[in-house]
Image (cartoon, rainbow, N blue to C red; front, top):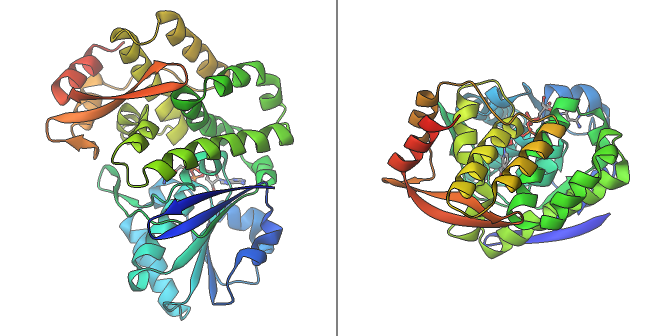
Amino acid sequence: MKVLSIYGKFGDSQLLIGEQIGNLKKYLPDRKIIVITDTNLNRLYGNRFSQFPVIVVEAGEKTKTLETLSFIISRLIELGADRHSFLVGIGGGVVCDITGFVASVFMRGIDFGFVSTSLLSQVDASVGGKNGVNFLSYKNIIGTFNQPQFVICDTEMLQTLPPEEIRSGFGEIIKHALIADEELFAEIIDNQQNILAFNQSFFTDLVYRNVQIKATIVNRDEKESGERKKLNFGHTLGHAIEKHSDLSHGEAISIGMMFSAHLSAKKGYISQQDVEKIKMLLNNLGLPTSTNIDRKKLADAITKDKKRNSDFIDFVMIKKIGEAIVERISIDELKTDILNYE
Ligand code: NAD
């Protein structure tokens, strides 16, 4: 097991990569513990946490709503939760995002931790203290910054993850490589056999390196006033695509990253050859790089991006593979680029 830390303004977070769900108890305080999980995790791993009261939500993105928040809070009250209770979210990004949010607002905030179970949540969603729910058609528009006390990334649990969810996780992994780690990008190209064969030690190392990238950025800029914006690479168009399709988060940002790579080339930062290299890797990993969604719908969705700052958006591009740059681009320019994007 390897341990990394995030030093948050209101508390630190221990990130335990390669730790196992069987050791969860070691990290729990001697208080009332309540588990929040989804239907899939409860079916597959419910026997590993049956000693605790469990609140089960439906699996999937549609669960990230205020209605689910109300449901969980009603159940917490029924279970006699109080200000000293401790919540454990066991699941992927959806369970972690909603558990962190419930813990932040229930009784004005109670302590919480995660067992992060999907590749996407281990490398990204469960790390960094952002949480929240979607509202109307706006993604993650309600939420807080609040660090979990611990995040257990049990890479053995990835073995039960459906292949499409492994693919989705690679969306965020390639994002990290593109914005911060050229070597990681090259290694993923060279290790496609280990990926396809699900080599456990390769995956544990991969999760560790990704958590390291994210934790380093979050430690420098927890509240996204500067450097953390780089983590939004591919997400402006990606979120618009998620809104208008059934694609997973990783798939949607894969297409978003391709668009951002094209813009990076258009601005003269990277070569057309780099763009092709990125496209080939994403395709080899089974990720989509284009969409038929009506460009007008996507351009309109951009105007509703929560990262918009009046008529501008801080848009993330890559200066080269392994280095990101954030540039203020007018919404009108971005809309035109999207309308003309093939
Ligand atoms: P998810 O939580 O819906 O998990 C994907 C699917 O895999 C679900 O059906 C889940 O039940 C299943 N699953 C999870 N772990 C499993 C396991 N070990 N075995 C079998 N099945 C398992 O989605 P996700 O891809 O983990 O996360 C996506 C969410 O994360 C999105 O809502 C996105 O907005 C959010 N996110 C948040 C942040 C952040 O910083 N807070 C960053 C990136 C993404």
